[in-house]
Length: 449
Image (tube, rainbow, N blue to C red; front, side, top):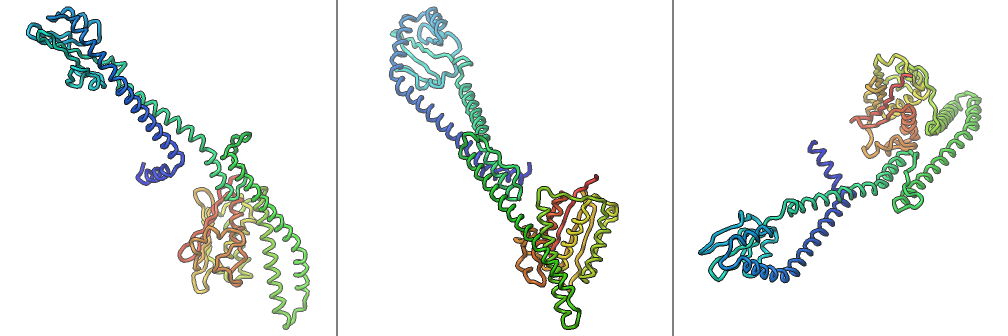
């Protein structure tokens, strides 16, 4: 894992609610274990030591009496065989030990030495001196391996880690609705309102289930408002078509004389612009519909682009200066919706011509065969767009502040329509600054059939 990936993972983990909850549980478990063990240990060390020490001392005295004076090695051996003790006798008449002296005693050995005894080398030793000068030491043997305290500590730690892993799984499951809500909110923000956010515990909803239901209801309300807006635009567009057609017919019937010719031409131009606007509105709503269908047919994209440029040059002389760069591989027909591809190209070229300076280089149209399909790229050499506005350029009726002049700005549907056509073909639409100018890129996937 690279340093950048490790840093990104650590940043996400540090700000993750799931990780913080698990760490809180782990700290709580450690604190509770420490408090419990410390309390129990303190209770035993203070409450029982005072009662046990006299018993140990009295029992040592009984064992010394049983060994006798002078000490008997045979009796001491019998005691060592009967009890988990190592007995050692040192004196003027007898020096004897029942076995290898234990190197270590139990962990509580230092605290368990009784009155009159001594502690040496970290083991519990109870010593007594007989009247004839012999010293008798009793040492507890080490515990069997099955009762090793270190093993108990490791088992406790393993149990604590297992509980932590279980807690992580439980917290991970508990927070799954939050991830679903986040994914649903991002999907709704992109305009995709189906499917809704899954709601768990719908019969007995908890707080997260209620939040998911609320967000789903909000998405349904937004979709309803958008559908109402689309229906209104469609209705208005359809209703405007008839009077607009009559107005254009009446304008064309006006007498063509020198006095009325400028006004007649201006009226026909405005009526044509209104007709194009209504056509764009209707087409945008058709493309925005979830049931939008494409009329795919074999289409040679470079030939379509050349025909469109020639048609545009008849009314826009600047279109004749456009530089077309097309790969020869695209001369073979592709299954595309020719009418909507023509609409996409017309809007992109018109947008580039509108923002190209008169004294600067002409716009460029590039048609390429990419790794995954067809790439269409249109570039102008104008002032570009502020970076903060790039993401909004393809929104309906959006125009940057510098494009709001009537002579240079459109109504804000051109790039939106181009994006809808690209998405209807299953492609991608991106916009970026080229410094100078703006580059609009459309990537269409390959459809072989």
